[in-house]
Length: 138
Length: 187
Image 1 (cartoon, chains in turn brown, cyan):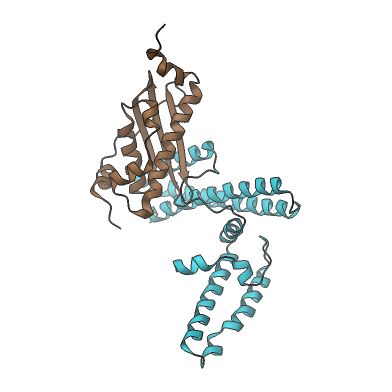
Image 2 (cartoon, chains in turn red, blue):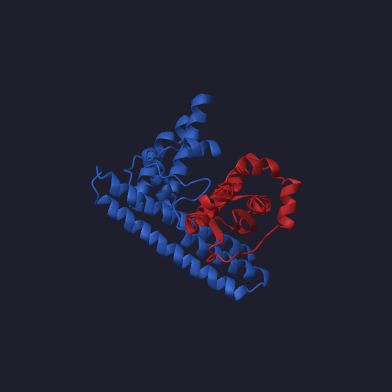
């Protein structure tokens, strides 16, 4: 099976590999696995004032899984948490031109994003309101 | 191959065995032998093309059912699929984040050992992981034994045990895949 140029690019030059401090209040961590292929993916976001200022990932798996998470971190930076929540696996799959048998890799990335956001919101229960607060005038 | 996998709805039924994790090897061999007699190619030597092809198909499925049931992990997977706890093709909903984090760390170490070509360390890890897998298989056996003692109407308990087995099987798969990586790096 041939990988697309974009997958190969992300595979050879993965963006944002690494870790953020998972104990930080500003950091949300998502860790997901795929039992069928044995892949494990960790994706972290750093959120300041409702905006994702940094994103890191670490993936042990096939080229498509690495590329999906690498692309996800690129997309996450600069987005608000709510915008990040809108990223769908289909966006990732079409950007990387993943073949049908590799779609599940993009699903894994979407689930990792969702978990990271959930973890962040869990640590910051009031974050949902604080993002909107600038609009509220006293 | 893939087509026959799809048709293999119930390897236990195909061999006329009760759905259970504990299978006596002699019973399995005997069930396979008995079922094979029915579809043996010799019996269809003079039959028409269609009947011969069907017999061939049936034999292939019987052999596959036998292979599935003699392997404890494939047998457990077959039972879970029949009960509606099939392995997820996408995201794992059974393993805890703690376990996945452990796997992540293990895979990180293995990747480093492979990069540095630390053969001794890799061999030791391979061994260690095989032991872990055996422990998991033992846990799966125990869980199926517990299941036997639960009334078929007690759905909550059955579901809880099936979920537990699902998680154990998933864990074995992560270990196996990592072990395969190590095997490829061993000289």
